[in-house]
Picture 1 (cartoon, helix red, strand yellow):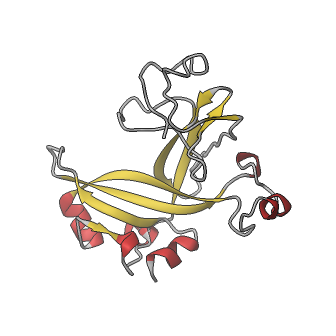
Picture 2 (spheres, helix red, strand yellow; picture 1 turned 90 degrees about the vertical axis):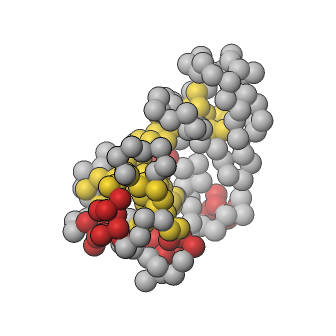
Picture 3 (cartoon, one colour; picture 1 turned 180 degrees about the horizontal axis):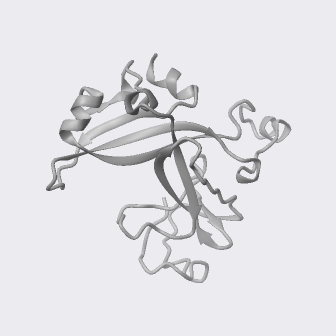
Length: 187
């Protein structure tokens, strides 16, 4: 089955794999993807009438493709996936990771207003149509994901309460962002 076809089934699929050049342990990074149904409280356009009124395909409202990263030993990745460097989303190759690992998987999603302290590149969630940063009670929303065994995920989502215009830095909006110390430019 092709990547997009497999993704549409809700399976956890391999999206991309690459050699981690900064690792001293001969690691690769595997990005996985899963199409999930969002809980109704996590989406503004939760009903079909609202979706149609705003020009959205109502069959796609309430769904989101989430990704997570995992580190793997290079030799294990080569054995399990047959490669250590490939963008599966650009190929006809769909890899259902539940079949590779031998048990059902899912992506656990936790949204909150705390930036990952281990990631210097993490940016807040944005509305892809407007590039506005999504805020919850005046704070930017951050998404944290992990790959877990199916049935063990404790996903939590925040429904944004306001937005910040694209191009506004967090320092410029310091009256809004009380817990942000850097000068991140919102996408």
